[in-house]
Length: 233
Image (cartoon, rainbow, N blue to C red):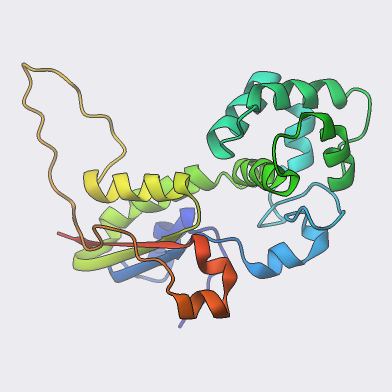
């Protein structure tokens, strides 16, 4: 067994370096590790005060602080709406842009205090959505996921399987659609052109597999996990 501490967006490249052209299976666990959530200085959790970091790999250049400090109001609005599904994403973005010129948003407490007046509903749930959006942006999680899925088409042997564990609806939707379509390319909607896409995968899990009661008792964080499996044709 060979451990390669790299982002799985580089999966194909590092397999080639190991002289591996095809594989029988791929398992991708998209969850943030409990260690990262529980280590205060990583800046992933709203439970602790620390720098707004959120990098899964600290070799990456961009932190969450740089996102909230440098992105335009329109960019912030888009990422909170798409990645966090924050109901007042536009107001939130506007408030951040105004606040960053007056107070420091470098720490989690400073960031939360600056946004206290725009929080809707349960503060913990609200900031969990906001932090999810920032974490996904910092680590390019959806971009990376798509790159890995596209590489799986070339890497899997016929009959080989890919299993992906997601932890929120945005990821799950990406995986579900890719398994069904086998690509992220848009099919041209033209009645005069017969564009039939070649089937790439056989979907094994019509509905995602979720944690049972026994697993939930042992690991409450598995509650949001969904497993989908597809087989290469």
